[in-house]
Amino acid sequence: MGGCGYKGGMGTLQSSPVVALVGEDVFSQLQSLRGVVESLPAGTQRVDVDGEVAELAEVLDELRSFSMFSPYKMVVVRNGDAFLTRFREALEDYLGGPSDSATLVLRLGSLPKTQRIYKAIAKVGKIEETAAPKKPGEVAAWATRHAKSAHGLTLAGDAARMLADLVGSDLGRIDNELAKLALLHADGRIDTGRIAGSVAFQRDQAMWDMTNAISTGKVEEAVRRWRRLVQMDSSTEFRAVTWLAIWLENVTKALAMLERGMAPGTICQQLRIWPVDIQRPFMETARKMGKSGVKRAVELLAEVDFRSKTGRGEMVRNVEAFLVGVGGVGGVRGR
Image (cartoon, rainbow, N blue to C red; front, side, top):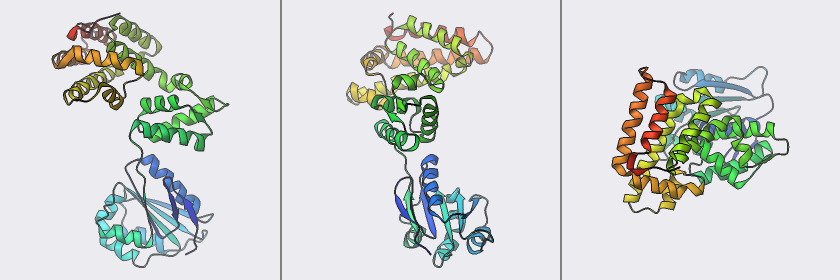
């Protein structure tokens, strides 16, 4: 087969009769798949099948048959793990003498190196790990690079960290948000203000500010922020319990980490407590609440959820009652 070269999403590969794209992150896999597609001859016929239901004969027929109007074929098997489980030995046989006019692409969640199929693929084809960054710093670094290469954006360091904090390690969503920012800002320069001002993030940022207010003991401010949130978007009330539960989970984790002797700065970094100036108040709040205070706050939140779902009061008022109530838990008070 001719030696077309291509660049996958996470590395450089050479064309081959089989390519295994291995990893759980869908966006990373699709980026790598794009590299495979771009490497093949113009007019290549692409066939996609679902590995959970596709039959072996169907896939092999596609690989071995010629297309009337295309010089080359690519057969992509999504959910490839299920396909390998059902047809492992038969695929090993095929790889002993694969088609020279088609590329089989297997999209896999995992591919242990100890398996014979791994060695069979590596012998005649390529295996590309498409693992995505997970740690906030790694995600921020990836976002900075991707913003420049894919969208022509210059992403400031603190803006990249903010984006990683807001979105997490979902690379597909980060890419989507960067694409929208590119449309909104022709100069291509993105700072924290522009990210915070994005419609997609305004509500999340406001909710974050509310829980930060609780973390710093400013109960009245938290209530004011909650009221503004509801005025800005009435649907916010249906997300309040989730956000407050996340906050309580972070407090619980912080207490457990303190017991293990971890430094407060390390704890806040791992829990993605930001901005920096609320980290110390957050830790102080966690210490004041203690395990018994957190338990009481969880009970209060469960009551809010129950009352709202059973029509006992409006969600808006119930959340307000929680914010005021949690102010008295473990001595957490302030203005």
